[in-house]
Length: 283
Image (cartoon, rainbow, N blue to C red):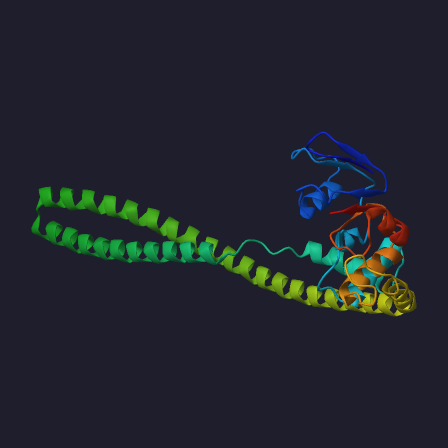
């Protein structure tokens, strides 16, 4: 790998020590994952990270169960489990069951619109009935001027009533469509939850498979590493289990891209590379 530092210095090789720089480990991990990015003037040329690297990119790995660690090992080696086919199918089905945006706001708006249209329609119908009664009274009285004025107002009110009726019908149709969509969304959400649970179960089974299959190798790798004398602890001290487990995992994995190490288990980057058989950036 080639590490191009912001200062212009370039480090090359499988073992690179950046412990004397002020570059954050997260920044180095990000540059390993995005080898084409030079936005922050740190660029790392290395093989593209493969399966398992996402979990193991930074050492030590903390708060991760042994089955998850060994799953990363298995995936990096291209190993499979009896449930991989079902995991793939469930993943595809889950992608097909996307949940649209929440319809509650739209439903509330349409219901308000429908209620307002209903109120306006009731008011205009009442006004129409009043004007018709008044028109009949004017006709009976023979008041031509009042008849014309009332008839003109009645036409205006009838026009508004027709418009409100149209708006109310449109609101009813829109509400019906949204309620059908809301039902479909609920069904999709329920199915998505079911698929999510099933996928989690299959992935758990896959982790158990890898934990069983790689248990002996993992135990041997941890034993060999635990027998080494860590650089940062007295020779008779017991290395932290989490550090040894992380290093053992990387030792067993087939990682093309480098890992970023902030632990001082090994005295230098070259020793870490020889022990782990993986390119290392020491921070």
